[in-house]
Amino acid sequence: MKLIFLDIDGTLTAPGENTPPQSAVDAIVKARAKGNKVFLCTGRNPDMLRPLLRFQFDGFISCAGGYVAVGEKYDDVIYDHPMTNEQRDIALKTLHDSGVFCTIEAYGGSWGDENLGDFLKGQGEGNSELERWRKALSENLGIKPMSAYDGSPIYKVVIMCNKMEQLDACREALGNDFNIVVQEVKVGGSDSHCINGEIINKAFNKGLGVRLIAEKFGVPISDTVGFGDSMNDLEMIQTVGYSVCMANGSEKLKELSDKVCPSVSEDGLAKAFAELNLI
Image (cartoon, rainbow, N blue to C red):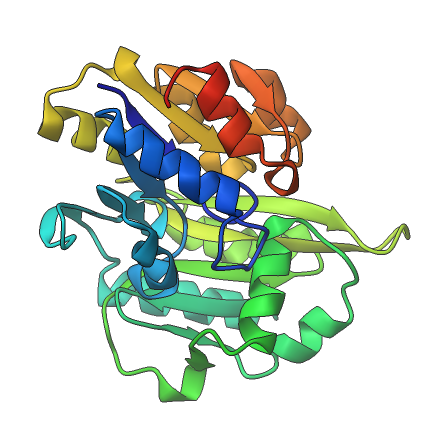
């Protein structure tokens, strides 16, 4: 039995979408029928990944590793580690004071700065994370205005800004306990850039989620396979027994992966599942 871990945006689906190619759906069904188990492994919170659960998985690693659940109804929670309220407040104050646009993610919802949509409109084409948030806003996938935040425990903060130095105050305040994972996106072929990324607790990552699930099912890490496309998949790629990066993914992640498969739009998952004898 193999344990298979799939990132969502840019890996299982086109960025920001909730419907995988039919070839990927069929491959997942066949892999599970063969006795393997398939898990989502994503930065999305459970609320944002919920539309994918209709395709039947054996569990998920969500919030970049902050919330991990398995079982037929995803009700066997094996890891749950939100920010403290103090950490949340420090993050938002230092980021907002520096002009950083934020979206905060809880188990059951997400809240974004009201002017984030205007910021995105001026950024041109970007990577999968930038595209996901643009589509999430434009297609109303449940990101509510920050003013409506209900105080729910927060797992991570998604950030967007124009300059790296805008993150310095947050890094100084929280750098001992949190990683600031960023990607710099060149905008429209010009010299301008958009910085986007996430504030993630050092207590967890996608790799830890992989290890917890492997321990739960008594499967050695050597029998785990991970698929990703961006540097927020790094710890998963470094942890699994065999790693695969999508052709549409980060060049650096490709160098670190055991295999590069065709892009999500070219039935990459199905082709890789077949080549790796997972189906």
